[in-house]
Structure formats: C-alpha cells, structure tokens
Image 1: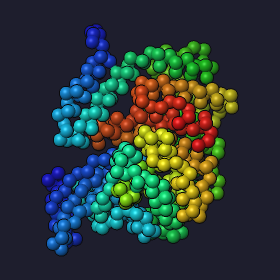
Image 2: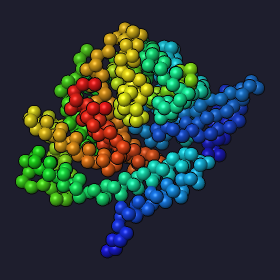
Image 3: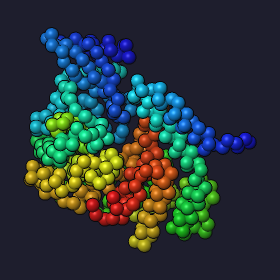
Image 4: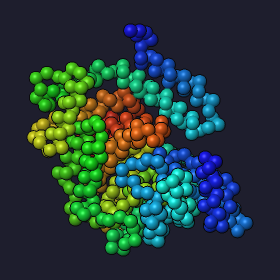
Length: 330
Length: 129
C-alpha cells in the first residue's frame, strides 16, 4: 500500500494536487475504490479514485471505457460525479484508474430503503430516477459515436441470452433452473427493440441519496448499448429490493409512478411484458453472476470471503426467475 | 472414524464462536466485522446443508428420475449430477414437451425451495410477493 500511496501522490502532482490522505472504501465487490483528500490551489478538495481490479465479472468494462461513458452521461444531464483524470498503471501495472468528484450521500442499499431520515427522499426517488434514466437513454449509437462499444448486432435481448449461455458454458457445473428460464425467454423474445446507452447496473446500492433526494448515479462498469428495459427492470430484481419485497422498485416504491414518470420524461411508453422479460433475465443474470463471483475467488487472484459467500446464493435468484415465469405477470 | 461431535455440530460451534466471541471485539473495524459475520453464516449454512442432505438428495433424485424416465433414482452425487446434466442439455435444446415443461418447472421450484429452507430460512417462499 505504501508504494501505491507514492504512486497516487505522484499522479496527483501532475495535475497540481497535493495528496493529504488516501483511504480504501469498502462496498464494491467489483472494483477498487478509494477516498482521496487533496489540496489544490491552497484549497482542500475531496475526490474518489476508482481502479481496475485484479479480476472482474464478464460484461464488465474497464476504467478507461467507463471514463468515456461518464463523460457522455454528464453531457446528457445525468446526475453523476464528473470524472477528472484518467491514469494508467497507477495501483498495478496495466490497471487504469481515474479520479472523480466526491459526492455526498448514502449508497448502502439497506440504509437507502430503511433509514428514517431518507423517507422524504424515497418519495421523490421514482421521479428523479426516471428523469435521469430518460436522459441517459437519450444517448444512442448514432449520437454516442465516441463511446468505446458497438450496439448488439442481433438486438439487446438476443445478446443478453447469448451472453448468459456463454457464461454458463464456461462453468464446470450445470444450472437446470437457469436453462429452463433461458428457454422461456427464447420463446418470447421482444421485437422492435430500441437501442440506447444503458447503465447496466441501475439499482438501489448504485445511487446516492441525501435527505433532499437523489444526489448521484454511481458504478458504470456494466454500461453498454442495450434495451432501455434492461435498466427499467434491473432495479426490481429481487435481491436489489433489500428485503422490502412489497416495494418492487428498488425496495422503496411501487411500479406505477416510476413507469409513468419514465414514459413522460422519455416519450417511451413502458410495456409491462418487456419489463417482465427483462426482470426474469435480470434475475438470471445475477444468478449466473453470483456463481462467477465465486469463480473469481476460486481463481486464486482475489481471495475475498464476500465473493465466495455470494457463490451459493444463485438459488435465490433462480427461484425468483421461476416464480415470475410461473406467475406469468408482474 | 470418529463421528462425535459430528460435522454439523462442529460447524455450529465455529459459527457460534465467531458470532458471540469474535464479532463483538471488532466494533472498531466494521469491514472486518462484516466478513466475520459472513464466515459465521457460511458455517451455519453448511451445517444445515449437512443435516438435511439425505432428505434433499432423495427428493431431487426421485423427481429427476421420474422426469427423465429413468428406471430408478440416482444413488450417488455423480449419478445425480449426470442426470442434471441430461436435463440441462435437454432444456438447452428446447426438447421438452409442454407437459414435461410444466413438470420440470414444478421440480425446479421444489428443489430451489428445499435448498432455500436450509440456506436462507428468512427467504420468502410464497408465489405471491
């Protein structure tokens, strides 16, 4: 860590910032994040530092690509901390990292859905989140030509299924419940899909809330060109309700007001059949994703107990996907 | 081979030690305390899985054999795994008739329920949430 601190200090000096303190932040099982206090022009400034981790989940983009995505999101009017400086080989050789603005707020999921002082904020969240999502989804492959990825050639739904199959085929074990749900999804592929810039991990825990409301969207590592329904449905995936199952939007709101606000802000009416499709798909993605978190541990490269503990939780997400299929509606 | 105290009991003892003796000493390091609680939970889950293993194995094996038209249920872990591979492959190819699909969904939900009752007793298992 001492060596890393020296490297961080040197990188900051190139931008006229003097390092005062650097502190690791826990809370992301995927990336390495730090709080960095610096002095610039004699004034104290707090920044965040986000680095490529030794391992990551399939579908995860690197910090360099993330930097470009955040620039595009900020330009579209999305509330997210602006990025400042991109560096290469900062914490480790070959690992890119960037400094970004520090934003205050609560991001821990169970606190966002339960803390008493956030009650007024929770009432505003459906509309604020819908508005910011509509802004993000206004970026298309035609307008976002500087982004480092291509739209899926056969459409977002096909791409999601193919990605899941590829992930499954790379695993030593088999998951019949996931295969069953994939089969169900293939039988009812959405048609005429819009393709937009999606966040890819749009859920409680990845946005910051203050008593005044939404302060920032975080964690762009799964961003890509996809269906707007990916973001609209992911926030309702069971695990992201943080035990508030009665509140299908992120554990804090009903579906109706969120979908209505999104339709109004985006001009895109919300089709519940497509939400259901992507909600089943989202639960599957997290089922397979949780197995892969365990594989990151088993690879020997990242021995974090939290990763291997998540590995056996796939059955929770599998149950939810099957439950939705049995019910056939939201 | 020594079998007293048995494996689940030993794991429960580890969990109880981590929860009652270690965790309270770690108030100053919340991140470490969180990981100690994860460790304790893992030990509890594995203890529960060991205690209920035979019943869960029989349930899954019996349903799988019926579903795949096998003469008798698998008896070993390897045989059960092989049958699950057969089911997974059939599902991937989309080969199941509508009747078998309904029966498969029922089997997969039952298997998930039987696991969740042990691994996460607080998980809401009703179809309507």
